[in-house]
Image 1: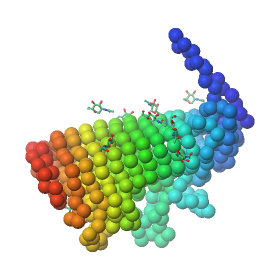
Image 2: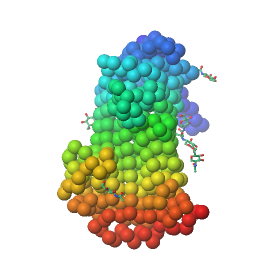
Image 3: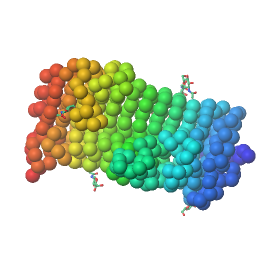
Image 4: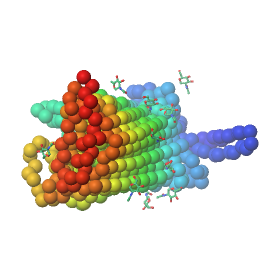
Amino acid sequence: MELFCFLFIFSLISSARVSCTSFNVIDYGAKGDEVADDSQAFLNAWNDACSSSSLRYPQVIIPENSTFLVNPLTFNGPCNSEYIYFQILGTIKAPSSPQSWDGHDASQWLAFKGVNGLKVEGGGIIDGQGKKWWDQSCRYHPDLKGCTKLAPTAMKFLSCNNSSLSNIHFISSPQTHALIFGCNGFNVSNVSVESPGDSPNTDGIHIHASHHLSITYSNISCGDDCISIGDYTSNIEINNVQCGPGHGISIGSLGKSGNFVQVEDIHVYNCTFNGTTNGARIKTWQTGRGYVRNVTFENLQLFLVDNPIIIDQNYCDVRGACKELASGVEISNVVYERISGTASRETAINLNCSRSVPCTGIRMESIDITAQGRWPLIVAMLADRKVLWCLGLVSNNNTH
Ligand SMILES: *[C@@H]1O[C@H](CO)[C@@H](O)[C@H](O)[C@H]1NC(C)=O
Ligand SMILES: *[C@@H]1O[C@H](CO)[C@@H](O)[C@H](O)[C@H]1NC(C)=O
Ligand SMILES: *[C@@H]1O[C@H](CO)[C@@H](O)[C@H](O)[C@H]1NC(C)=O
Ligand SMILES: *[C@@H]1O[C@H](CO)[C@@H](O)[C@H](O)[C@H]1NC(C)=O
Ligand SMILES: *[C@@H]1O[C@H](CO)[C@@H](O)[C@H](O)[C@H]1NC(C)=O
Ligand SMILES: *[C@@H]1O[C@H](CO)[C@@H](O)[C@H](O)[C@H]1NC(C)=O
Ligand SMILES: *[C@@H]1O[C@H](CO)[C@@H](O)[C@H](O)[C@H]1NC(C)=O
Ligand SMILES: *[C@@H]1O[C@H](CO)[C@@H](O)[C@H](O)[C@H]1NC(C)=O
Ligand SMILES: *[C@@H]1O[C@H](CO)[C@@H](O)[C@H](O)[C@H]1NC(C)=O
Ligand SMILES: *[C@@H]1O[C@H](CO)[C@@H](O)[C@H](O)[C@H]1NC(C)=O
């Protein structure tokens, strides 16, 4: 079932021919009528594309103007080609009922596992239909019998190299929209995420155990962190991301299980936060060990953000339930530069550092945050007193 296509690229001075092989889900029996279960067609198209050998660019095509209902699915690698494209032109829709996950792993809907050179793109829509999951989540309905803590992530990328996700619109995931786990070399760009600000645990993009990753030119509106950076991560670049509503761009929480945290070389710049609960956040548990180091937050615009700059080295998910410990995750060399805009509360900067493993090398420059109707406050518990000079850099001109 291989369809061959030839793409001719002409220009005035040269011409090139690239051969590609398309695996259109329609040719595998997908209906795209929003009703029929198209899962098997998707899997068959993937398996043929993934095992097609001699050609360099197999592409799975999900055509436009159609909506494909698909059950939980895993697209497994490794594939035979150096690159494989997953072109989502139309809409892929999850079943609306949580019962559809009976007998399946409730943590995921669509997953790519062990694939190299994967390119997911196409301008299409991933609709997680999360409403029924949200309505039964323990977070907002703790008294509901059979409430759920775990709901599917719309799209997971597990163990991959040299891959990318671009030009895709995610809506209403039951929980996290996209997870990148165990990947080396991953670019996310021109992606949008759209879920209500009160949808439970709907992180935009979560990164874990991944290196050399970028997230750029993307707009994220959701009910949890727009981007959350988990453990064992390094070389993460985030720029031109618009976050809001949501919980900001967060590193953590880290170290909950007492593990040795390793997070470093993170650069977040040219981003905006609109109506978010946090801006630039780092949170670690006192039970953790290890480090978070070399982090830069630069050139950020804030519009009515609850906690614009926050480090919480004493993080605890239930306020007051964690007693003070002599351990903690070391946080060092964190730079905040050119961060401006408005805070919605009076505390603009909160550096809640550990007494036993103090934050070091925190540098602030050109911070200009105005608290609405109040003088902004800075709360800092630091061994390194030098940081307090930043006080003078926070403007206190009230708006009204
Ligand atoms: C999809 O719909 C648009 C707008 O109706 C139309 O212009 C386009 O030709 C359609 N594409 C296909 C492949 O049918
Ligand atoms: C990714 O690259 C690493 C290092 O080269 C390799 O060990 C791993 O198997 C690769 N992953 C996949 C899915 O091929
Ligand atoms: C971004 O993605 C949209 C579709 O989601 C597409 O129309 C647009 O051309 C893309 N922009 C860039 C710069 O690739
Ligand atoms: C990623 O791609 C680059 C360039 O094509 C290649 O040199 C490198 O070996 C690839 N890395 C992995 C882990 O596949
Ligand atoms: C990711 O982006 C970088 C910088 O633009 C580029 O060098 C690299 O090849 C891209 N990798 C992938 C897998 O798209
Ligand atoms: C993000 O929003 C801006 C307008 O604020 C728009 O120009 C841009 O295309 C959007 N990008 C995506 C990926 O949706
Ligand atoms: C800090 O991280 C950046 C990437 O964000 C990297 O380019 C730089 O080399 C790192 N600096 C040190 C001292 O490791
Ligand atoms: C980031 O913003 C600065 C200042 O506005 C600008 O000079 C720079 O080109 C921007 N970089 C990116 C990658 O957006
Ligand atoms: C912030 O979001 C609100 C509500 O969505 C919108 O009306 C406003 O224009 C946004 N502000 C900025 C500066 O983007
Ligand atoms: C700092 O963290 C501790 C422990 O969670 C908490 O009791 C305290 O209120 C926090 N201080 C501020 C200023 O947020």
